[in-house]
Length: 233
Image (spheres, rainbow, N blue to C red):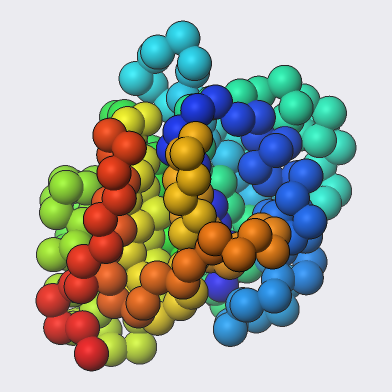
């Protein structure tokens, strides 16, 4: 339904993370290699990042147009650098609105969050503050309401309530990067300068590893842990 990417490490430009890799989000918007649901991610894109100067408040750039058609972003992205980034290209769930507010990353306080998947919103806890009526925005609001630190617990609960849900989440707060795998792909590249978590590898570096389904990834302080979620098979 989407492709997303998270970066935590030494500052990199948004262009280096999203546009320049041979199989980065730009290419994944029209030719993803591992996407299991849908062929294109043309229903918008978004990037959230944190100021190098140290502000806790994330900045966002979101659009309802395809990433390949946004020449303004392409011209500015090389000048935007950050140590922590969450970015996504979107393939909207059938019946969901195509608008910037329905495009990840969503935010609450210091957190950025992206959802790759689909969920029946009737199983989600009732809460206010969703940025859009789309399923991903409502799920994000539910996660923010519970607390992102409890991400794994909520994903297990929602997955049990909606067995057909796909719940790959990517969240960051400037110093921590969290991700879940639940029904879709996620890969990790952990190098000396930082860690990338992405729906699929953006190049053919042999150091990429695939994260097993129904797992939680937690990266902070230069360390990365990968643990099974409750109810994993």
